[in-house]
Length: 71
Image 1 (cartoon, helix red, strand yellow):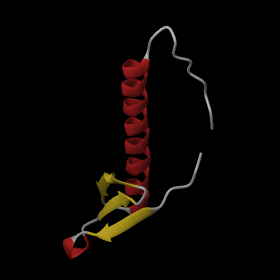
Image 2: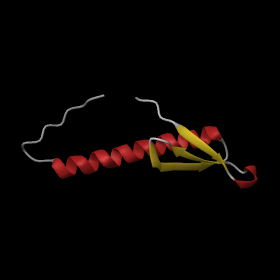
Image 3: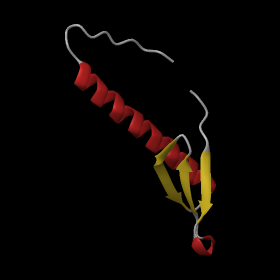
């Protein structure tokens, strides 16, 4: 899988971080540590990709549609 860029913003009073995925700025995480924020970003990215895949397949599913896996 491609690498993504996480931007970590310290929370006020050094109480954790807000993390934003640079390539998908709507994917964010809030956590006490950078490591935890990274894990949450990864989970959120997977959820978004699953949702978008499902929505696209439902929208374009018909007898003439061919779905191929590509990486």
